[in-house]
Image (cartoon, rainbow, N blue to C red):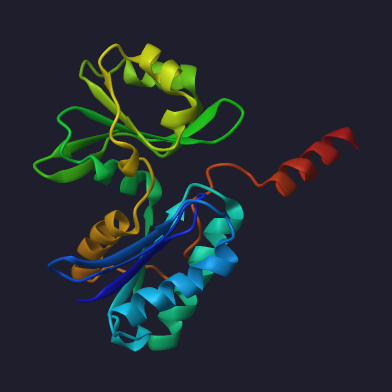
Length: 234
């Protein structure tokens, strides 16, 4: 089974090709956030460099979020269009799962942290269980103080992974005395990591319903918040 995996939910645009035995190729850009311009050319180049076309694919994987509202919509609409076009299935995977999978060999608590602005982070708690990723909490948007309270439940070392480690490294070190941090190249969601997780589902015959599949936002959009604020003022 040969699949295409993409993520455009953060500042990173990343695309990967995988089959059941290996990662065939992966491109990532972490410089410009013009995913509406970058994503399709990246996919086209990755396919052409491997002498493939979309019709050679057996399925797709896309990040469901959390992250940028616009980026998530771009990614999901791209994959939905390709899935419908060649009548092949797709699955969506949280990029929090993807970040945790980057460090799945860590023996302890795995805690992805993505900057959610205003002192908050997107996060979830994981452990590696016999080589499989086990999620121990809901997907959350919480303050660093709330994250500290959550981690206090676990008497284990913890590894923080994600772009939130750059902004909040000192605060995270203060949350857990036995905190660890991975190399920089593991601190962003890789399409290959999402692809491996998604491929497991596709091989089991699982797929998203194209009519009901929606991004995992965790927070309301700015437009929704402004509308609710206006209602309260009225």
